[in-house]
Image (cartoon, rainbow over all chains, first blue to last red; front, side, top):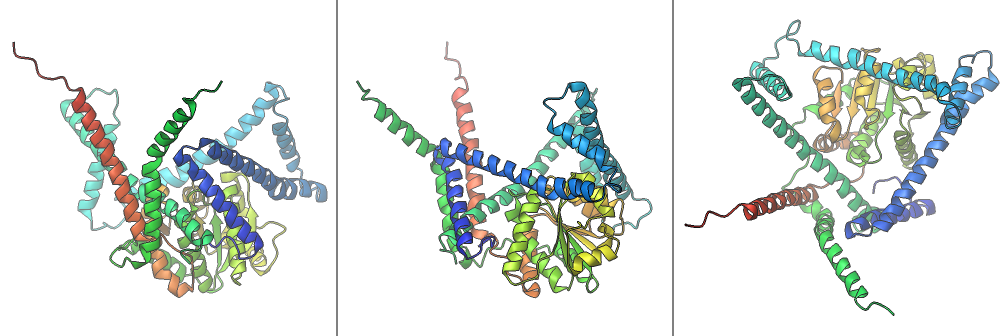
Length: 214
Length: 290
């Protein structure tokens, strides 16, 4: 009852294929690895085919080739893009000195976006939000002090190799246990989340496929 | 000549394999049984009793003006989407019930596949699917480029025209609903779009594993609303499905989750006991009296 497949022949076929593949993946639990490996290869093949199709139909043709052919005067910047795409396709045949600048441009561009975004969008606003100055007191002073104490203790737990006194060592131990407690609580949520995925699959088999739950 | 001992070895191996698999198979069987029985368990509740996050999302949707343009950024993962599927469907229906004009775009291939399937599902149910803005390549660079232009040339229809009239970029929208996955999450939206369009409300639905990463953005106000645990999602479905006229399909029942949690605790306890027993077995015995 996930609603993705219709009631027509195509939908019924899709439900059967999905159910058989689900059971084939679960066969790993009973030690039938060969069937599981076949399913892994099937997934990898389908994903690759889908990615190639998506790249051609949604990116290369409408955003690169069509503008270059239909409006060449307005698309001068796409010529180097076409050149870079061509070089990436032929990377295994081209000499390393020719490919190095292409890789550097790609990595540099990605790093610039990620780093710039992290500084402007995360670090600075989060520091600003944590500072008490310039905002009305939240009224939960005790909660904020506890947060500050826990943050300090957990940060102390990451002091590796630095010279420590007895007090710092004890504080770091407390911080480590707080960290373990925090991770434990989060893992509890995560177990619920993963169980919900398993329950969803069982619901699919019982509801969509066998129609027992309908 | 054939080795007569071979079949016996194979049988022994097979039995050993099945014995190893028995706990997992038993868990599957119990979960299946609990799924069948979960309708009749009134005493258990999965929805979070704290409705503050649900209220935040409902308020953000309720405050939208009529005919507001809303962008659904659909970048969920194939693996974790079932966890947020019901909440996402109800949110889309809730937006439609508030007369929002919806458009859908994806920045990840996984998200594009799920978005296309959701559009097909809505169309099959005789509803009007969100305007399709397709797939934008380039991950975070694509996000930044979409601030200037997000409507592809091939997009047709009144919603696409309205977006073009309002500038054609992400700034044309009154709100963005980010259906989050691991590759392009709500964090990418906050960092790349939120820092450039600070007045644009960003609301997010995300699977549980993203909760620790996204919660600080909710606290700092960079996200207007966030549903990032299964319990919040179920609470939102319970609160909004009726008024949105939505049928999102089944949400996980509390009984299978309880069975699963008990099984997980049993596995942990069994591992701890086994370790304890092994340690005791290794401990050297006391010295013999002289």
